[in-house]
Every structure is written in structure tokens, then in C-alpha cells.
Image (tube, rainbow, N blue to C red; front, top):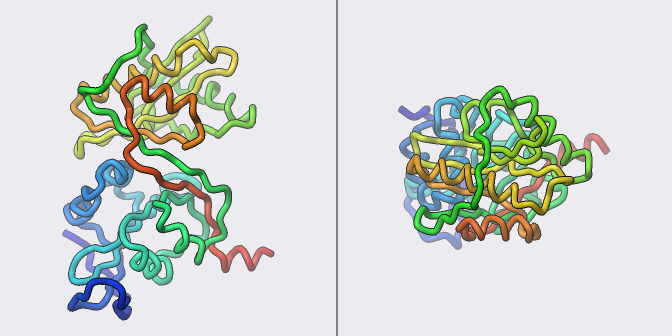
Amino acid sequence: MSTKPSLYLFPEPHHLPPVRDVWRVGKLSDKGELLAFLQRDRFYAAYAIGDLEPDFFSQCEWFTAKAGGRIQTLALHFTGLDPHILFTMGVSEGLALILGSALRPERAYFTVRSEHLPVIRAFYSLGEIKRMLRMTVHEDDFRPAAGKALKLGPGYCSELKRLYSLGGSRGESVIAFSPYQLAQGVFYGIEKRGRLVAAAGTHLVAPTYGIAAVGNVFTDPYYRGRGYATLCTGAVTEELLSQGLDVVLNVQEGNADAIHIYEKLGYREHCRFIEVLGVRKALAKSRA
């Protein structure tokens, strides 16, 4: 059952197709209705679909803008990470109404399509914009790498934290690893002299909805160029595909080496999107 939202009513924008209703903005918790909208672009919405799983759903706030009795725009506010994640999907007019009235986090890390960026800018001061690719792989296209990686269990949590810390200390992007990802997901690594030197895993595995996201791919700089990232990523992908899951991953547009690795395994680009940290403008002004 859905929670009946508090509604915010707005005049209908003139350039949208005519409808018999005003805009209605509010919270929604009906998983069936949310999933039906997210399935319009299943691979772009993969993380949001995963957040319908019980372990994550309690950490989510779902806001929709409806017109004509149908969802036109959805915004997911995920509070389980710091900074909070804000995912958007749908028409820009609806997003402006959501951010202008119902959903006003002081700080959030946005995942948005490029057409939503002007709306985000209207409400938030933005940091560095990361232009990302969402890639997918089909079972028929998958080409595993030669070799064998080690499957990692919960006992490798501290080793993974140590390995991933090498990225931040060398000026690279910090790997946002959390122990729950290891406990609930699939991780493989390469071990040398009792230490992990490379690893790949998952950001989420959503068996209820048949989808998973590969991530946390990293190799110790000293051991790069030996195919370890390809081997680990391939092992994770192979296990997920064997479970009948749809598999996606994210990579920055400019990361040619990583894109080459994923393409060798059979991944192909699905869409492009933007990741950016935003601070609500009123808050930014008060701190100036």
C-alpha cells in the first residue's frame, strides 16, 4: 500500500501535452508503482531499482511529480551513504517542482541525465561535474578473461579497506567501499604475498529485481598492467550472469583504460549521465 502524500499543486506548464489534472508532488512508497516507472529505463535506473530491496528501502525517500494521473518525474533520496545520493528520472518540469517544494536536502551527490543539470543548478551550487557512462553486458556477449581470481569472503573486509585506501592517498578517486557491500555482494581479488593487490566487486545485488551493479574495481599501482583488474571484473561479472542477473557498471567518460577493460569483457555503453556534489544555494550563501 502506498502512503498518501501531502500534495503540492501547481499550474500545468503550457508546453507539455494537455492533461486534465494539475501537477501533484509528494512522497510515494508503492513499490509496484515505483518499479513500473523505473522500468522505462531499467539500466539507467539500476541502482534505484536495487534500492527497492528491503535492506535499502527503509533508507530511501521517493518523490514523484504527477500530471494526468501518471508519474512524470521521480527523485530518489537515498540516506544510507554520506553524502546522501539523489537520483532523478523523468521530465525537467517535474523535477523543478520536486526540488522547489518537497525535497530540499542541504547537501547531496546527484546522479542525473544532462537535461536535468540546469534544474539542479537553479537550486544547488555544484562541485566538479563527472561525466559518466553506464555500461551493460549481455550473457551472449560476455568474454571472460583467462586466469583465476580468488573469491573474497567477509574475512577480507580489512584487506579491501587497506587496498582501496591506496587510491585516495595517491590523488585518485576514493573507492566508496562499505562492509555491507562485501557481506551482501560478490567480490574477487588477486593476492600476492598474503596481501590483496587487486579487487573488483559489487555496489549492489538485487535478486528480487534481477539486477546487479559491478564496482569497487581497483589495482595497487605497483601491480598495474598485468591484467588483474580485467580478471577480477570478469570473475564478478561471470558469477552475476550465472545467477541470471542483468549487470551494469559505471565508468568516467575519460577513463579510456577502464573502458577498454570493460569492452574486452563484452560491456557496451547504454547511456551517459552526470555525477556531481551539490550544496543547497540558500545554505551556501549563509556560510559565505
